[in-house]
Length: 138
Image (cartoon, rainbow, N blue to C red; front, side, top):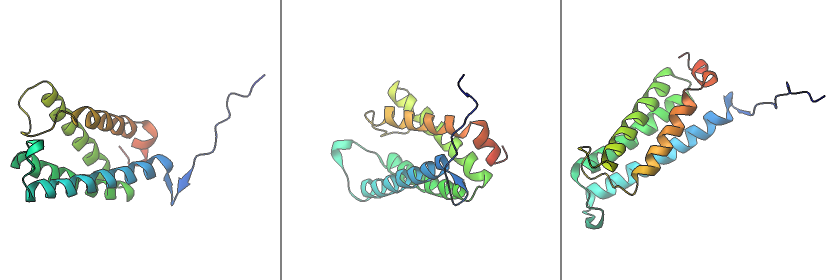
């Protein structure tokens, strides 16, 4: 008979689970990319993207919040968990509205919306897991 109660050991780095390490690294990268491209769009008019000033500011703001909440998650702060969930929900809704041709943040590119929605949903579902919520006392 097979022993089905065996659970492989969890991998930790500096007291954080592998999932939190990956999430934090990914969020720092995503945030940095958005800040960089937001500043680039804001500084130079990139006509082929048909971006607007609202989208430029939105992208910079999103990037800064993503980095700030990633740092808070790394520090095991409840605010990092709550902020990441809130921003992910907002991005999913804004991108969903864009795909449906409904009013949203002007300038959100339709080609990026599906990927951003999927990424945000993966983040939300991971952060809503019981073991992760318990880590942040949620």
